[in-house]
Image (cartoon, rainbow, N blue to C red; front, side, top):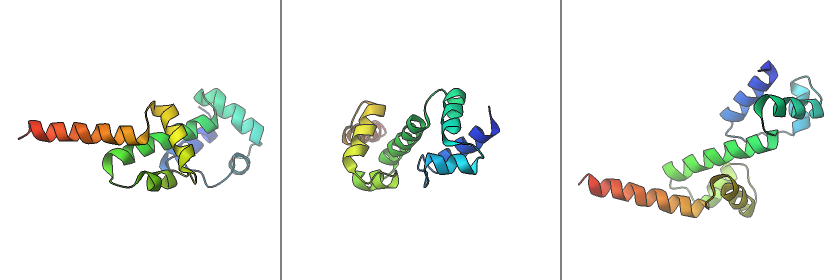
Length: 118
């Protein structure tokens, strides 16, 4: 894998899929043009940069839903969404369920585990 893409993937993972700059700025930092970065990323990773960022953000959001009692709006903001409706749309696209439904399911599973242990 191209070293520049490995570096970008590491940054994306460390930042939970939230990049504070545009693809053009990222490309410039990596010594590439924006179009070249996007083509190279797709060729190396097998999906677009935008899709990868969304997938990483949604994986991070699912973890936060499972481990935190944070309100969903706060999780959306932490994942880089200013509009909760966009967060819900992307979450449902990736996980095939809403954040609320996932949280309820996780709480029910935790409750069942607790009941079995007593």
